[in-house]
Every structure is written in structure tokens, then in C-alpha cells.
Amino acid sequence: MTLLSRREEQVLLSIFSLGEDAYLLAIRDYLSKATNKDWSVGIIHKPLLQLERKKYIESYMSGATAKRGGRRKKIYRITKAGTEALNEHKEESDILWEGFLKTADNGIKQ
Image (cartoon, rainbow, N blue to C red; front, top):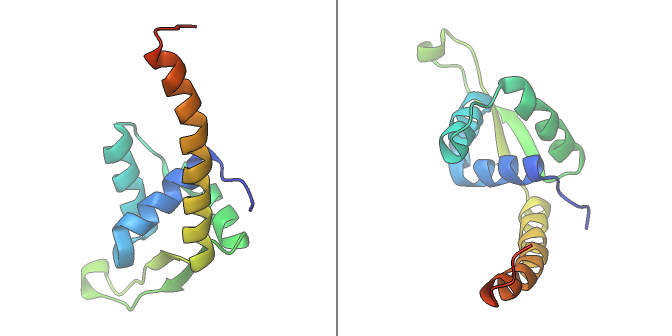
């Protein structure tokens, strides 16, 4: 498995959660709300390119709508490989967090 950066993980999870509404501005809004931080479009664009290159996501152009002045949106969706990468990433994280939590439960503080 290719390792995911934290930002790639966040973008992937956002795409999964948004489903068919996963376009750039919706992803930005979702991440901003979820993390309580202001995400710029530029900071999301690079992970999108990386995830598409890794075949963890794919994109397609939506139909034009009057609401958008006839413009189309680029919609992203997670692939099977992307879902598998997220599952593996979570399993690895859970193992690492388990060690930390055991230590923290024993009252040991760094």
C-alpha cells in the first residue's frame, strides 16, 4: 500500500462523505467545517492530483446547470483502491494509537 499523508486522508474521507456532491468547493467547505480551519482551494488541489495519480479517486465533469451559468463541475469519487487504502490506513493508525492509549491509561505522561 502507498502511505497516505494526513491531508490526503482528510480529502479522501471528505470525498467519501460527500458522495456525488464531492467537487472542489464542496470539499473545501466540508473540510473547513469538520476541522474548524479555513481551507484554501490551493491546499486541496495538490492532494486531489496526487490521489488521482495513485488511482484512489477518479473524476468526471457534471452536466451544465443554469444555477452555475451553464458551467460544469468536476466531481470526484473514491475508487475501490481508495477505499482499501483508507481501511489499511485506519488499521495502521488504530494499532499505533492503541500503544499510545495504553501508555496514557497507565498514567504515564511524556
